[in-house]
Length: 305
Image (cartoon, rainbow, N blue to C red; front, side, top):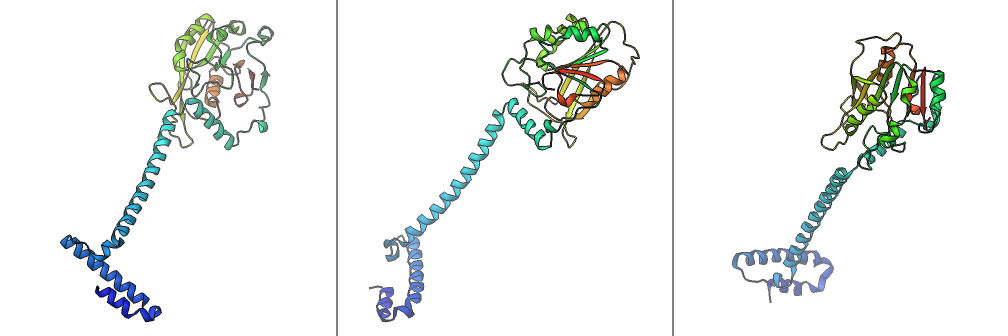
């Protein structure tokens, strides 16, 4: 019989008063027996009763639970990183649209400028001959819905339109709409050569280009996805045919625009101001236009007006 057994037998007649003492004494004896076991390697009554192994198992369980939480957090982070890497430009475009809606870009509340001339029509079936017979334009601006090699359009592409094959864009009767003047064509990276071909076909010669460096609301560079490099700019090619339009001015503005990225496919207002400075009081036409690009004294043709 051990010392602890004697104490328990002696105090068995008064459990209510001695219970706590017995427990404290038993814990102390258990600790001493455990120390003795660690020192000599011999087993003790406490260890043989399973108390120490139970405490050790509890500690290991706590460590395993903590490790599980760490692994869950790591897995969540890896999932987010994989989702970011797999995010397509189309997903980013959807996010931009959502941001525009949160910022109050509600087309239902849109009010067109008083002196703009919007023409809601499909550019492929519109009666361009009638328009050409009424007016010859000094400047034509367009942001074609270029068809990409993949199905995931990138920033700046007019995805709200059905993407058009190059042959469809080529068939636009641009030569009928202007005999003298400028053309401004927004172009994406893999369509530069095609845009130059279109210029030549329509009778224009390349004379310049404009780079729009996109910025965030914090005036930082707004980068987007690209195949090799991240894209933070868009390019507008400038062509000219015939004589200078009336009142045409030279060496104005800048060929670089630093401007905040706004609504979906919404181009910087600075470009319109530059065109109006280049050809004051001119006759301006925008093809593939949208509500957010309507402007006073411009004729705008598009199916989203």
